[in-house]
Length: 427
View: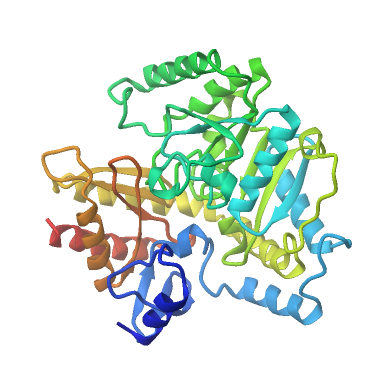
């Protein structure tokens, strides 16, 4: 046990998870690579949990942060803040939500908290619909709507949460149906659920479930849900904390795969926009955002230094078409991994979109999750010089692959080769 690991265990909570039997300290990074305290280099396919969106040590972001730090770092939302207004203007325009207002927070958890506050206040209801296998953060209210037992340490909640079918396409009672029949069955389930409860405030849903193992419904499910929700005045909250900013390749926002019935009423974001700086936020129609009748501020949400980082990062993303790169490089990476998976009985499915890829592992010959294999593959990948994540929900275990969106074709091929060796070594 390293000295730093011993100190970590002595002073930090037992439930604060660490990857690897021998945890590593990451000291610096560049591009798509990071280095540990022993000087070993790794290809990073997890990006600080989908947070290093463009690249490690991106010069444009580093320069913006340094220059802003030399002027002023923070003043709070009690004063006019030019970088905050500028970033809000750009996000409002990109969101697809009409008459959009933007509120900045420090994390995705806090963004989802704010969205729940807005929805329940606007609708005068504390009932919320959420998806099974979902994850929305670690705060008291966010845990209360998380449909993933492994990340829900308490049943206490200020909200009444009802869980809906549809977030996982290839498991559950509707898995054997065609896409159209799957959507129809989930819609009928939603209609039936609404007949048994008081009117909910909102449905909150991740277009692709992150912690749950990068699972998703067929395109169009949430559009079909939205038609039903609108009949009842129920709001749709799209949790884009992991899917936003072009990571899925096909779309800038995950909700756009379900946009046939219009945009969500509320959109939450975080992670990638700051490229490691603590930025989260909420976009909502003005009438919803302005429904609060008491004072509210954010001490650290929208602080100048994080907004400077976000502006520089977003500009780089758009000017270099990283969404298109995610589509092209991610498509190659998915197909490469599917070719490998076809030869390995322990791989149930390779799924995902763009540079948001899940590899679900099972015990060969069964449909039962193989958590030990997932941990072993993750360890073997690290030994080979590749960092990846893990996730999953009810009886599932998946490897999570989400590199920075600037990943090159050569790096994708290198990472796939390392992961193939890791998968084969644990068969």
